[in-house]
Amino acid sequence: MIYCIFGDEPYFIEDELNKLKKTFSDLDIHKWESTNTFDELCEILSSLSLFNQDRLIIIEDFEGLVSKKITDDKLNLIVDLLNSNKNDQIIFVVNDSKLTKNTLTNKILNEAKIIESKKISKKDLPSSIFNYIKQKGGTISQADAIILSEILPDNLSIIISEIDKLLVENKNITSEMFNSSIPKYNLNNIFGFSNSLESYNFVEIWKNYKQQIDEGVDHYTLLMQINNIFSLAHKVYRLQKMDFTTMQMSGYLKIHEFRIKKANSLFNKYGYKKVLKIIKESAKLEERVMYKGAEIEKEFETFLIKQFSKID
Image: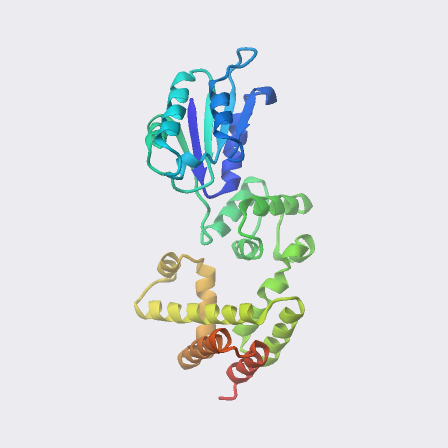
């Protein structure tokens, strides 16, 4: 039996591999990786078990499945070895979302059991977190699931690991637990500056700006945050004018409805003219810094004072 597990989500790939490994002893599991040679791959496929036991052969990231660099002779040899191997279970693992077209992939796509591992989109991640916690006997609000999806890295293995730790601490997961239980992804650090922008309170904005700089965030990153937040607010406004619902905007922009509502709230607080002005001035500032060599700290602080102190 041949399997092909491919996709861009390592957590799901590892999960599927572990399911298939359960029926085999460690002695009967053989793994070939991209750091091994082609001859070693041929040797694994052509050899027999010492005790005539069925083996599990894992072939990870074989170049012939994603690249055209492998010669036809080598591909045909692998196909012949697969045809000759009637006893073993063979798993091709590809950490990529696309397979190339050749004689080997044709055989795999026609004969193998295909398992695709798709990465969960940022938009769907909060509901996946909510459902996972529910399946584990825990609870979390939809709003807190959104916050958790934002503060954790875009790595499902890390997300699952951190959630499992939270569930051990308390089955009822709340945002109050995040800062104490997940200190390396500090909630205030992540959201402090963007939340202060939404307040349109210069004292808050300046305080959070200084805090971000003290914690090692560079000025250019903060400028991009401003540009992204206000650009999103403008996009939401334009889509509203086209009679898009919040749900439709979420699908079109591929972001969660929670962020749509926050962008709309920011737009209503600043108004059309001010939002446009901030977008234009942030673009001009980026140009001065990137192409004209302007000193970013002074320029950025002047920008904050002019745009957020309400002295227009």
